[in-house]
Amino acid sequence: MKTNIVNTASGKANVSALFFVKKSVQFSNVLSENAVTQVESVLNGMKDGPFEDLELLEIDGVSTIFVDAAKERGLSALDHLRMSAYRLAKRACKRQIPTVSIMLADAAPEQFKSILHGLHYADYKFDAYKSKQKDAFQVTFEIVAGEQVAEFKKIAEEVAVEHKAVVLAKNLINTCASDLTPAEFVDNANAIAKYTPGLSIKVRNMKQLEKEGFMGLVTVGKGSSHEPYMITLSYDGTKPARKGAAKVAAKSAKIADKNARTSADHLVLVGKGLTFDTGGLCLKPPKSMPEMISDMSGAATVLAAIQAIATLELPIKVSTVCCLAENAIGFKSVLPGDIFKAKNGKTVMVDNTDAEGRLVLSDGLAEAGEIGATHIIDIATLTGAMVRALGYAVAGFFCNDDDLGLKVINCGEACCEKFWSMPLEEEYADALKDKFADLKNTGSDAGAIAAALFLQEFVPENTAWAHWDIAGTAFVNKTWKYTEYGATGFGVQTLIELARRMSKADEESIENDAVVSEDEYKVC
Ligand code: BES
Ligand code: ZN
Ligand code: ZN
Image 1 (spheres, rainbow, N blue to C red):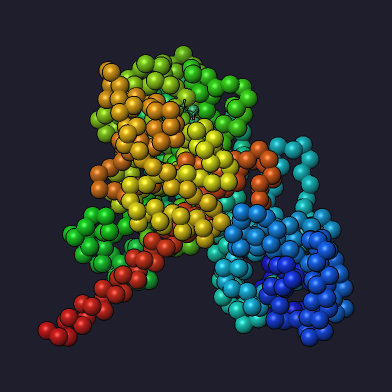
Image 2: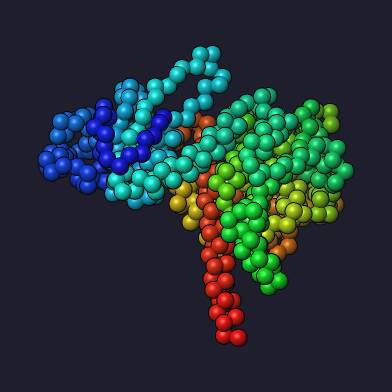
């Protein structure tokens, strides 16, 4: 797919695309009077039932595709646009139309963004394992942007960066487990760190993890022939070398004295990275096992997000911690009933070897604390209970900080990713207590809540924290919105948006602060 953003239509496109909702055409101010009349009569003729989406008609001498932007139930207006653009691109590709012109001169920036996302989604295919790879037909989309050309070009660059990240996450998740072991995940992360300016990387292997007491990863990973790893990637967009960053740093230092929660924000993203989850000795049933190639979705999501955040040079400090292991059966596998001491000193009895995600995440949360997180988001395909509760369309999240929780929901909405707030229900906390150890890794029947309460035991003090359980949303086994089968890339865009909004809030408050202090100075 190629996009060409232009001021006015070149007239060279083979087909022109028109988005409509019921009887009204969207983004229509570039149509001639004659065309408007013809389009109106076409749309009026729809009253006997829904118009056949993407029908090709002659309007004012131009071959025109009508794209219905209001068909799906339960989706936001922006998501309708994504879906419509996705369908448009698929059809244009199937019909082998070389150039499609889209009239967007009066589209709002977020509408344009949605359309672009839809076009990008249509471009994704994962055929690495097919014996024959087919070259997809390349469609060029001429975006008629009127006076918004410059702004739309900037948006297009950002969306391209975001989608590169989404594709990275999806490819990693879709790759089978024997081809993406923890060590191979590390290779990918090393390459990304090497080619992304501003990203630095630290990798700990099994020996180092053991030496430093990251025993959750060691306990889960030691049963496999593929050793576990922890990756910490760091990016600091507030460094004085960047524009405006000196101000950011000064402001950060000032607030740090007042309140640890709102000091120089350091957002740490922690990802569950089980390159495969057999369940360990508490073996999973065969039916639900193949999908466990996606049990490293959290790690893939945070790796992809930081790649984009660094590429976009967002003025914020962000780190990611990927907790990588394979939960396998071997002669060294952890035994049910075994007890280990976690990095924060708490002892844990492994009641069920299939509840391994929370064990590796305990180390990720500890590492987040060690590197000075003010905000932590952990992302994990953690529980089957969450799949049963919310399915594949909505991710459940748990949060100890209202401000962060609201941001998650709002950023998700802006990115067409749905989040539902779940309770950290204290009444179930006692169920995590063990007779011998401080904790056990199973709890109440409310499985997703039990897992979140377990994680909460490892969240560093004074830290805003959210836990996203993406077990349902990370991977789909049937077509869902703009994903045909497999990894959805869920969460990548919301994380980028969160970093974007957090960085903006920081910059805005710095500016306000600077004005106040300047005035104060004059009065004195
Ligand atoms: N990786 C699974 C959770 C999962 C289930 C992810 C379905 C994606 C789709 C996790 O490690 C797991 O097995 N959790 C157990 C915990 C239980 C044994 C306490 C579960 O939810 O069944
Ligand atoms: Zn498991
Ligand atoms: Zn798992």
